[in-house]
Amino acid sequence: MGLTEGRGPKTVWANPTEIIRRLTPENPVMAFAPAVLRANAQRFLQGFPGLVTYAVKSNPDEAVIRTLTAAGISGFDVASPYEIDLIGRLAPNAARHYHNPVRSRAEIAHAAEAGITSWSVDSQSELEKLLGRVPAGSEISPRFKLPVLGAAYDFGSKFGATPELAAELLRAVADRGYIPSLTFHPGTQCVDPAAWESYILAAAEICDMAGVTARRLNVGGGFPSHRVTGVEPDLAAIFELIGRVTARVFGEKAPELVCEPGRGLCADAFSLITRVKAVRDGGNIFLNDGVYGGLFELPMIGNLDRLQVVTPQGVTRDSAPVSRTIFGPTCDSVDRLPGELSLSGDIEEGDYVIFHGSGAYSTVTNTRFNGFGQMAHLTVNALD
Ligand SMILES: *Cc1c(COP(=O)(O)O)cnc(C)c1O
Image: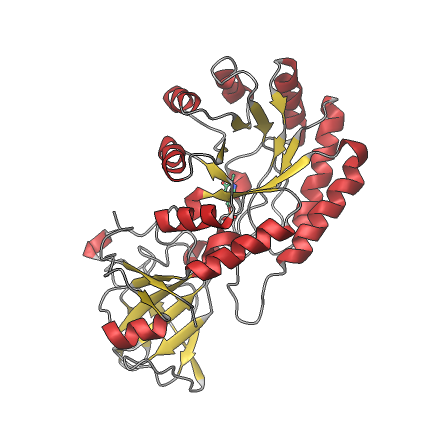
């Protein structure tokens, strides 16, 4: 497993620059700052008007789960028996919401046995599979979708019922004596707060159509992380909007709110340290990590541009930026970052490029393709 391989001695480093200066690492290093993760957790716990659960898939590293639990995160969005058991082991008192709406019968049996009592569903056939197999008193949340809005990546193309179908499912859940709730996920890195407003309005219409009062409304993940220099996401504004719109459209019958951020909690607590293998004929840059490694999701959701070029002596290069094509280490031509990225013009072979804000969908999707992907995990006090 890439998560533990190459883990260095149990040392806490000051910051990524110190790691470069002291270790001049040849392989990629993922630097984790627990203090930043704790601060992110506090931002959600204090700002979000409801229960905060962590979407485990975005980064299931045990150090992340333990840090979040210690910081007060008491619920997790889990999608597989593996994630159910991981949280059962690391955070035995936490709530686990099994929010993958398609499951095999064996997976349902495993989850019921593990004590799962919150489930999502987006089709009649999958609801049929749950009925009678999940514990009495379970919460079942129809998941609905709207045409994609504002997000970097469209999760709705795979999951989610139309509002009409969601209303039928909600009615059926209530009729069968389970706790009726609703859930949606606006898509990842959703920078437009209006997306949540549209979904909350639709949730109220679904309850009206069904003639059912939803116990809880889960507003999904999608909370943005800081991916672009100078564009810091305004989480407080999104939290405020979610609370205000819910109170306005549901009034007395307002459901309790739940959110399930992945990226919004973990991404900015990590920086990926990569090394320049070559500046080919003074032009294209070849790094020791790429889209089969820690930069897996960039072709799907766009570049992360919070980059820092550092010499092996730990000095940040700050010359006029030059746009470059950046390739990863494998022999596959798709192993290339989208478009071009601006890097200090005096970058040299042997330098390091640090990708700040790279903790989501990176360590967990790192592969060993072509023999690369030997990523070390080190802990730092700060990321800059
Ligand atoms: C992936 C996922 C999340 C987390 O998404 P982020 O964009 O990382 O916040 C939340 N809920 C569901 C159902 C998901 O599939």
